[in-house]
Image 1 (tube, rainbow, N blue to C red):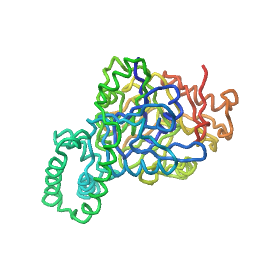
Image 2: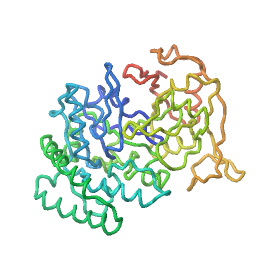
Image 3: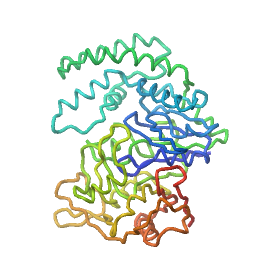
Length: 424
């Protein structure tokens, strides 16, 4: 068996959690392969709304194996709150959640270092979610991080040594007042560590490959989006991990030859949270309409998202980097209200039009748009592809023609049952 990969093709917030939940019946195993609790995957079903930050989005389906891979960074406090939220709703996931021993832990001081670093940057800050993600990956790359497996071996000694190093940085480099905040969260953090111990802690690379060898089907679930990738995103306004398909190999221990289908998710328009370039951003009434109709506020931070028209230059770039074999279009219904819908097909820079992303997206860049007719129909009431309005069909076909990749699912609302599989 090969593992399929599902990931975002924009700046994150594409709706990956909902799609994983919808596709989970087709798979035996769901595995998160990168990122941390700065990612919030929102699922809505049975009149219930749940945001998952660390736990894979297949957790609500019975008899499925869910794995937090080695490429994920885990905050024990957030993990504990997430488990409690699920328990309060009647979900017991203790039997089907597995955690990689090689996944790194977000320490209380990582969050403090994140805040101190952003404060020091002033106007040049990147818009971090302040969850400690960057400092945790920095320790990982610096070969100084603590991993889940460490909690089973001389953990307090390892923890104390790392915390003392962080305290020195906070006090002597950042001149950051940390003592009161650290004291208030350490006890809760260690409670989270004890909870983690109660789950299946595994050598996930062996576990995953054994499952595949046994004929189990696996879906690798990405977090954030391609344009936030540490290498190929809009650096430095990116996350701290590889959000692209290759991240599933390093984040789960999969050989490239074991990757099957690559499912790319995108919104019918674009959004972005935090700082950084955004060529099609709309700083006008249209942008406000998109934000309101799409309820574009961060599921983790609550921050209003920046909104703009669909960017095919960026979308084609993401398809190339990931080797996308099929696409899933989310939030199509948000465009119901528009008479005319714009799509960016190129960038104009100093009088020259290009259709690839340049090294740097400067302020002089101007998007080149084409206009398509809107459908002015309430898509949320449609349950069959045959009932799509003609203008919506044209919108789908135009994107497929420009990208060369089929759209196989269109989402027309937030709920599980508002996800329509398309027949070609």
